[in-house]
Length: 221
Image (cartoon, rainbow, N blue to C red; front, side):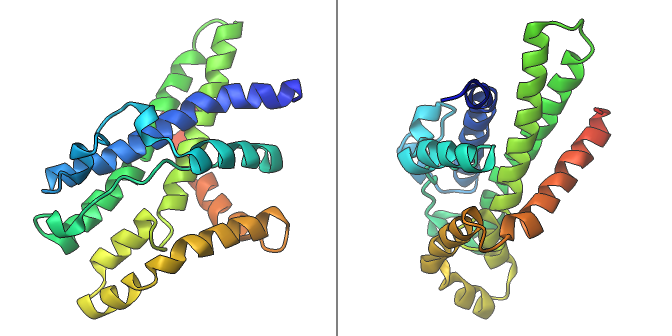
């Protein structure tokens, strides 16, 4: 393993752990707030990252994408939500689903503020490292936010769309959920071997827009 790869893993590890942990914890907190305690009873309403780690999506996939794409992409073990247990299932589904991407947005802002503070201090090794970590935090959270907002089930964007659609359309759309993960895995695989450019055409521009917006708002160059 070369030194450059080790440095990238070191820089991205902390932001990625925070990003996926707070994303899933936000879903759990929102679900309990709106009436479903499933995640709480299973110990998933926690900031302990160990509770949210999935061996494939949290460890293997980030390492694979780091090797192939130069940056980590992954996910945590999904928080279980009994949508039927929500006070108003169709409406509250929107808020529970949106809580995860919203947590990523808040973390983007927090990392940007940290970056703003770090670049104001005298140049040093620790300061330079924190600046790199802050930049990685902005990027990782933007990537997770954008990806999860794609209008596909079982992603958060698919849940939000289900809650917004009229009942008949929402029911028809919900029937696509068993195939959604296969579609996502297929897109990631086809992108990795150069057959398609889904990330380049759709995800990357949205991530770039999100990061540029945060940089402009916080005043980072």
